[in-house]
Amino acid sequence: MKAALLVEPRTIQIKDVQAPEPGPYEVLIRVIMAGICGSDYSLYHGKLAVPLPVIPGHEAVGVIERLGPGVSGFALGQRVTIQPNFACGECPVCRSGHINICPAKVRLGIDRDGVFAEYVKVPARYVWPIPEGLEDGVAVFTEPLAVATHALKIAAPRKGDRTLILGAGVIGLLTLQMAALHGAEVTACDLVEKRLALAKRLGASQVISANDPMESAYNSFDLVYEASGAQAGLAQAIQLAGPSGRIVVLGLPGKENPVATALIVRKELQIMGSMIYTDEFPQVMDMLKTRQIETAPLITAKIPLSELNRTLKAFASPDRVKILVTVQ
Ligand SMILES: [Zn+2]
Ligand SMILES: [Zn+2]
Image 1 (cartoon, rainbow, N blue to C red):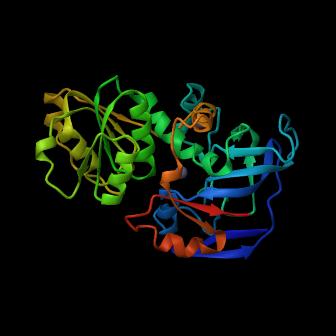
Image 2: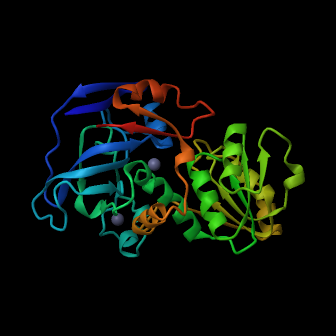
Image 3: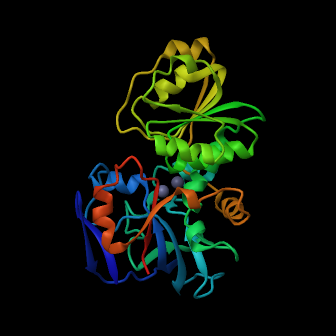
């Protein structure tokens, strides 16, 4: 099969490799379309300490090509999407329902070969059928929307809550729409004008440019979603949150940054982490199907697999939101 292999940091080569064989309780999926994620970019730059070569990519839509031994409940040719973090299912963390933070979790496209290839094998229990009427180009947003949905499960705005989204990338813009659906009064903050314009179009009543001084917005928000992953993201959120405010941190900064501990105490802030997702996939696909969430405005480009290396090289471009890869 044709596959995009990360052979060394900053070098993806399209190669002909052996297609994977589905093992017991696995399915083989023929990939149709994939999405490029921030974590693909980190992996590309060698920031995740994993052995290479590896086929990156974890956001995908495809069809069932073959069933491994013991798999039932799927039909060949059925359209599916993948929940791409495979928990062990047996440790105390998993047994308490927190499969998203299982310490033995295997990440598709990082710890094992991912979706930037013609075929990928996946444990059947992490494969979700795509409902009729949900197109590939929309269904491919299931995984990132599950991230945003989980963040609202951690803390959702009450109607009218002044809610701030820090970082108007894909996750920020999806979280923004989820918050707006809950009746929040949403403000978005980003460095990039184009993303702020998108935030307005998708329901933000106000935007703040992160290039401008922000002191006038300090202590103003009931709820802050930190989706920028910027090093100072949490420190900023602590300043911007109002008394008894809640902060949900979704972004993973590359470096630690000091925060104003005294403000957490004085304002009695609640700070919560939100890590990927657990059981949100069916609900998310339903929201996509019923068009409660807009995805088309988030698509910056669609590229063939052969453009992946060049695209990841230029991925830091501030205008970029979601780039989709048409695999076949
Ligand atoms: Zn992703
Ligand atoms: Zn586990």
